[in-house]
Picture 1 (cartoon, rainbow, N blue to C red):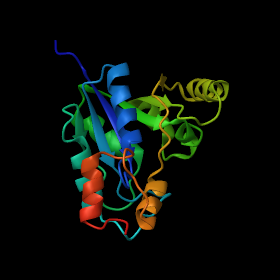
Picture 2 (picture 1 turned 90 degrees about the vertical axis):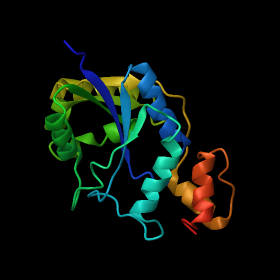
Picture 3 (picture 1 turned 60 degrees about the vertical axis):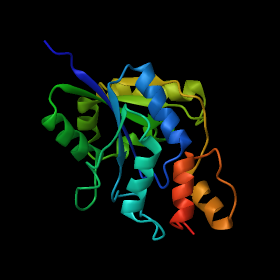
Length: 203
C-alpha cells in the first residue's frame, strides 16, 4: 500500500515573493516531513486588489526564479487559472478531488488564524486540510495558543504550530523600497532582485 503524500500549500499574492515566504515554506517542509510545498499565487481575492504596476505574468516569473533551485517547491497555478474571485475552499475542494491520496497542509501566519472565521465555508476548509500556523511575531504565545484552542474546539479543526524563525519582511515595504530606489538586497533571492531591476517592476 502506497503511503499518502503530504503536500504543503503556501498561498499568497507574492507581490513580490521574498525570503520570509521561502523560509516559512522551507520550515514547514522539514518540520512536518512534507513531500512537497505548492507555492500558489492568488488571482483575485475578495479582500485585496492587485496594484497596476505588476502583471500576473511577472508575479509568476518571480516565483519561478525564487524556487527554481529547490526541488521540493512547486509552482501551482490552481488559483491563477481560475476565473473570478478565488476562495480557499474551492482550491482545497479541487485539489482533494483530483488527488484523493494526498493530505494537504495549509501554511499561514497567526494573523490569518485570527480572521479565519470570516473565510468562505471555513468549516469545510478545516475538514479538508491541516492548518500549520506560524506566530511570526503576531501577539504573544499565550494569545495564539488560546486562538488555536478556540478554533479546534469550535470546528474540530487540526491545527499545528509552525516554529519558523521570525523574518519580518513586508511585500508592501519592498515595493516602496523599489519605488524610492532603496536597497532590497538580502530580502529577496538575488535572481528576483535582478528581474525586478531589469523589467522595471514596481518602478
